[in-house]
Image (cartoon, rainbow, N blue to C red; front, side, top):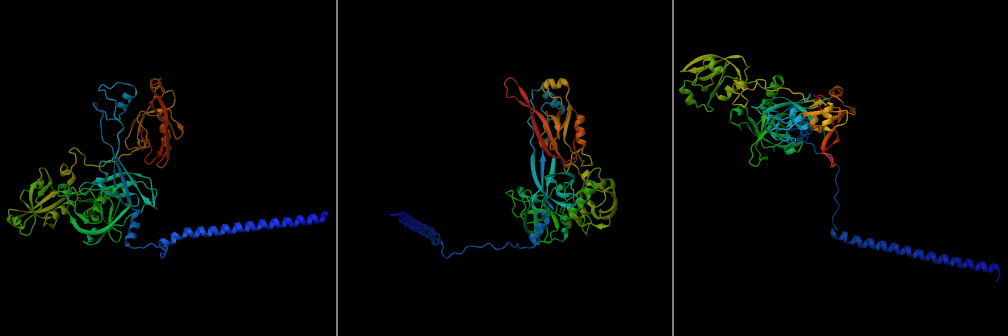
Length: 539
């Protein structure tokens, strides 16, 4: 066989092999396809068998349903605040006239001076938190809330809600309060004007009107509930303190934490300040009470002017019930108020008023009931003199009575301390809130503190900026905002360059138990920081 024939045979053999390989691959591919389809059919069959006649649900395009309640909720959201208060127990060190945490007490414990009473100091006191609500009524940051929300608070903090985000807590100061209406005014510093809730007139409210309550019940912020006005001029507390408390009653859900929040009408106007509930369970049972807006506005206006509410009083007592037959027996045929007690040394006694006189006119206004008497007298200017007509032994007699301040005249009945000054509110500036002392060479040697920098913290003011970030008595401050601190003057110099809103980072050295058995203690560097929200620092 020649070479050409041999080549032709090889080519035919190669083509046959390629054809066989191609057929094999084609067969395998068909098998894979058939197997896949068969597997898919097997898996799908049970799914179709579950609900073969069911159709998938489709979520429609989001289209908010606007109504009056949603509009009011959006409007009120940015003008209602969450209030958090912190209270520290006022304690003294056992066996000492020095308050716990005083500089003398700290030096005794810090430098090893023995305590003659054997006390080793108390642990750091914990704050007792409380919560409530408030309503912004002035764009400059003035807020109305309840007195019981902020009463005896060492610190008041407010959280605003804007654009869906929780802002950080802002410190607030107490402007004034009125225990008799359970109202208070606080203020926060603002960089720009805040949104407020428009005022409404509570005198226009009728039983059956819609009522919307907004607040932070049980800490659930921005809660909105709806109900109706159930009653007007409802009296809950019959004591002396409750004399000026005539509430709007509503079945809108009001719970602990709603206190101080607004009660709105269907126009989104403020008609009341949510104040109290009557409940056997501690939660809402449809008996909520709000101080009417007309009262709240009057109290607010007096507080921002005087720092407190000044109400007139003439120093008398009378029965709540004034039966016409009883009044007629004293010669008052057209109504009046029978005086049952005249306060010793009060304006009425000074003017010659007697027990069993019947008051029938004050400042030219006829008096038919005790409520009318209270309303007219409370509205008179303190220190002014008004004519009061009484019926005595069947004859009319006019007396000139000088109006006194009710909060002073009835101080004990209203719960004020006997020696309390007339000015009930005093402003207090809180700064860094620490007291520091320079360290001498001998003190450094005694403490085993070898660094040349540092000032000793001798006291920390409760609820102050320093307390917030964790500075403790007996810490040694060695650096503020990365600037070395070697003396009190260094601290003052750094302080002078700070303003509210600045970041403040503090490095302190803190003494603690040593891990080395040969040492009793060792110094550890602690880094603390926060945003300065008050006026710099106090040293």
